[in-house]
Image 1: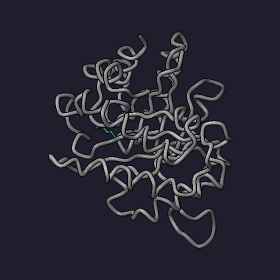
Image 2: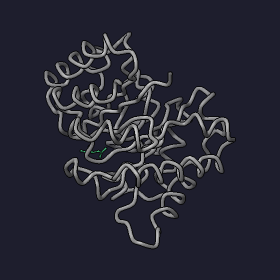
Image 3: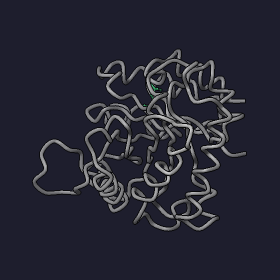
Image 4: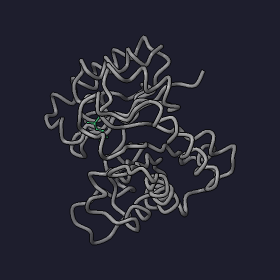
Length: 255
Ligand code: PGA
């Protein structure tokens, strides 16, 4: 059975070393008896080493919330993919809407390429700001995918660099469960994204790329979105930064 994937994007909700430690070790304990769920935690950069130490030798992976488009050189204040890799990070989140606000499509493409070059796997976020009745959001998603993945290795699922696509409609982020994407709309979008990935990669590789949903997921809507939305799991923001709400999502997903 394919495992369900839950990515916890802690954003800047978790800022204390002790809180990061407690949350990661609570998750480790919770997952010790659950074998149907894989998780990736995305702490802010100063907390990466703390979390990595706690989850060492477990199925919980660690990723970075962003990555520099440059691997090295005179670029103050950005995290290099090479440095992240060397610190034990496995994944880089690229194209989150909270970063896209100040990062162009070219920068996002360069971030993906830097991550791949350094051997990091990529969680690529795509999502429209608003929807209209003409369906313009579909062509926008297609553009975001083809631009960011223009030079991604053609067989992402099999190679050492893996890819996850997270559909995160901006209008649904940071709200409440009732304002999340509706399962039927999500299913339509997952089919669309899968088809777009098939154009970019070969079919066998495209089928293996997990498509996640993000935007106001919590314990009350996770099950329905998972069973009816055609996704492999979730990219969770606010609810991933609190043990109780994160565990509610895990319980809703574990089957
Ligand atoms: P949210 O955020 O779960 O707080 O809506 C999701 C995200 O931005 O990744």
